[in-house]
Length: 79
Image (cartoon, rainbow, N blue to C red; front, top):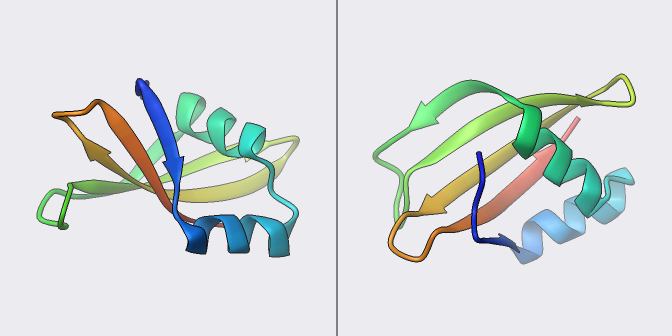
């Protein structure tokens, strides 16, 4: 998935710091991920759970997408 802008929630930034996950790791997951689940009814934007592997480490990213602004919002990140 590609977005014009990638925005990180405060929660995502906190979890990334706690789990030693970089923004480059998150971008790699978003670029090469498998979609585990879609949540089309999430508000304010539809979201999805992604799974990707970075240096052999399985990472999940919950990402929502604002189609009008072409922005992706990283909700949380975990291993």
